[in-house]
Image (tube, rainbow, N blue to C red; front, side, top):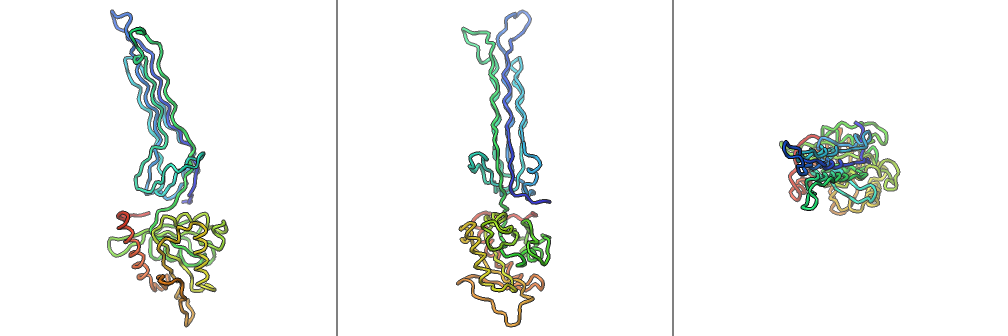
Length: 337
């Protein structure tokens, strides 16, 4: 499935039905009173999160969502039927903005969360409502009100517990393929990962957390170089960052500092997140290799996704961070992304 994380759509709620002009017609009552019914309400437009969705791809093909108008009122005081609502499913993590004002309307992060995005027009009142002692046969009824309409901009930020950050070929895709059920494309050249990948990491018997692998960052990513800028938003919601540096990098410590610099330029808040350093590809480490100092108190874990070295310790450390933050927020449900 193609990954799409931004889209624009037009939504229009249904107009209200017209009120009816009608007069009671009964045998032996030649001049019955007004009995025009009210028009029905126009259909609303709702947004609803769906855990099974992980992309905004559908909105690249369907860009207009229009609800049904209310049915007009009828005689004998019959109210018209309300128009059917339109419910638009979006992935969890979707931010919705008014395209004209850029105001954030909603940040939809909960499962099965619903928000009324455009309200249907109210049905017009029938002529029965306008009878007075001096005007007993009103020939007037209200038209239905217009339904709300607006252009929406939607931006998807994936919901994950752990975000993998690193240069191209740092081993992020290999790692997520080994410790989760995700099967990203893996090859020995830069930018193998072209879209974010999510994987469920099982921990012990009944525990799990979600890991996100985004395309590799290069120096200048925050200014739009490479693929970094396009996908850095997807680690903004994560609880912890795992910064991957490869053992075969020319200068591991400098590579780490460059990665932090790009994160800071994109969003300073990313540096406030808990993070650990993961030194990858230890199976090809040269003899006598020593892990350099990164930051005081920083947890550093050497691993090899090929040999399995350090993977259990990595999962232990990630779970310790994730579970601590789950207790602060809410229980993490097991499931499949």
